[in-house]
Each structure stands twice: as C-alpha cells, then as structure tokens.
Length: 185
Image (cartoon, rainbow, N blue to C red):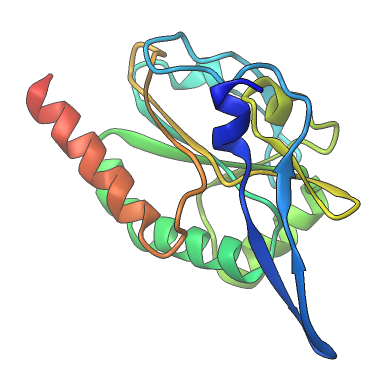
C-alpha cells in the first residue's frame, strides 16, 4: 500500500437515530495522489449552473481545489460556510475556491441556493477528477470524494496538500498558507 493510500484512509462516524453506528470511509483505487511540486492535473467539469469550468482558465491565480464528500451534510456545510465567510480574503489574495464532489449539478445548485454559496462547486458524478487527484473513497456502499485539498499556485503547480482536513478550521489554515507563500514568494 502506498503512503498516499495510507494518507487517504479516513475515519468517519455516523450517528444513527436508532443508536450509534460506526462506518469508516476508506480510499478506493485511485491514480496516485498528485504531490507538491507537480503540475496540477488539468480537467473540465460543470459548475453548479451546468457551465463547463476548466482548471486551465485559472492560470495566474491561486486555486484552492477542495474535494468534499457530500452536498448539504454537516461537515461539508461547515467547510463551505467557512470558505464563503472568507471569500473576500481569498479574492484579496488573488485566489479562487473550487469545490469538487461526486454530486450532480442539480445537487450543487440546490446546495448553493440553500446555503447562499457564491463560489464555484464542480460536479464530478463520473468520479474521473476525484480519482485523478487520488481522492476517491467509499463510505459504506457509496463512493464519495475524500476531504482533501490541493493548493495550486498561479503557475499551475501544487504547492500544498491537505488530507483528512478538519472542516471547522480548514479555511483559516488555507488562508494562512497562501499568505505565508506570498510573503516568501
């Protein structure tokens, strides 16, 4: 098992109304997770409006490419709300946020409307990009995106990777990393 498979294995606990039921999310067969220093794998996926969005169109900007398990679930909503709360800070740093899950365009549209999200969510129901980034996992019988984030610099290189992120503090962690890299850069 590669070190990336080990890193991609995550534990999750589901509370069921009838009692406590423990389910572990686990990685499935993926391409190797891209590493710091590599050029970010390119892709085009539809956003919450169904419009194709290409990673290449963000050259010259910092890109926060975050993978998350499921629209409108607790952890994913917390993470999205924190990115939304900090959106002005990202824009001031010349950064964009792209969220990716295996949910559909319609699900993303509903999530954005319900939770007033104005950044881009990308639909990958075929799981191609999630696999390409070594982030496909399973949660019981469902295949989901693992909670991983890739920070891509304006030249298209991956400069930081987070796995199994804490949605409560992740946006602040990413902002700090971009700020630190811009100071050094």
